[in-house]
Image (tube, rainbow, N blue to C red):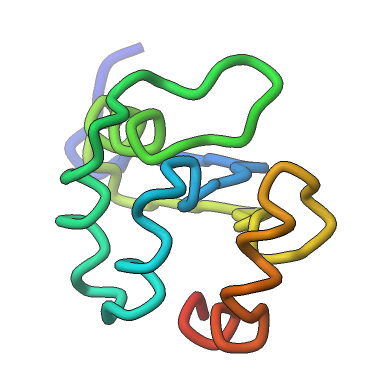
Length: 109
């Protein structure tokens, strides 16, 4: 199929379960920093490997996905969730509890 100059590219990503607290050592910094500083905090992590199958998406995997996708004309991201802000995630339950879900939810929006 020939590319037409009047056509754009579309990207649809769905059902991403982002875990911003996969590196628990970053939690206090993330809780205190404005969202516009989160990228530099994530990039300071010593954890560089992608999250494994069956686990939520960590920052290295999310960043790699964004870097590998072309810059689309029409990006759509549906069902992006930050699962660790809710105490139902048993792996990070203590983090969610001491950090305070209402405060974190407010910053995440």
